[in-house]
Length: 109
Length: 121
Image (tube, rainbow over all chains, first blue to last red):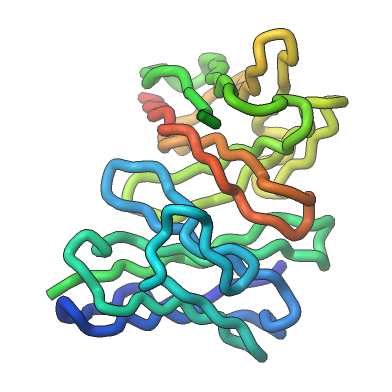
């Protein structure tokens, strides 16, 4: 089965840039979606199709995907960005299962 | 407004059956896949399966195939997740979510608020 690897945690100072990676075999050939989940809340979609933002998501959130790594970048980090972030793809090799990364806890210092 | 509203928290014992629900509003219910995602306390997201309410076509994650049943009632725009015999390991938060577009490529754009299921042994 397809595996997505994320760092367990990322720490960043307010106003700086947070970079969250999501590694997978030839992930650049897949569409990657990113979700933000704050404690006690449901996930929300922050990036779809590698780099598109849903309406209402700040431009500070951006994404890229190439080779074996997809990346979510949060620019000018704010305290309210502190959350868990999950990447997601579809595994076309196994009857199209949904695969989530293990999640990355972003801590704003 | 597009919304998914889930049923309330449940406390059950091992071996009991359970059905939780997810009611959709604000869009054409039969035109979008709806999926279920499990989150064990303190852990990540696990995809369980999806259903196309239009014809009840259902796909399950191998990890949950045979352990749960996903169904839909189009007359009340509601999707269900059902267990016939709960285990303590089923204790988790369960989220329903709408697949924005195509099965096999797209994202989950709308999420329910979650239903906490606690199973005691």
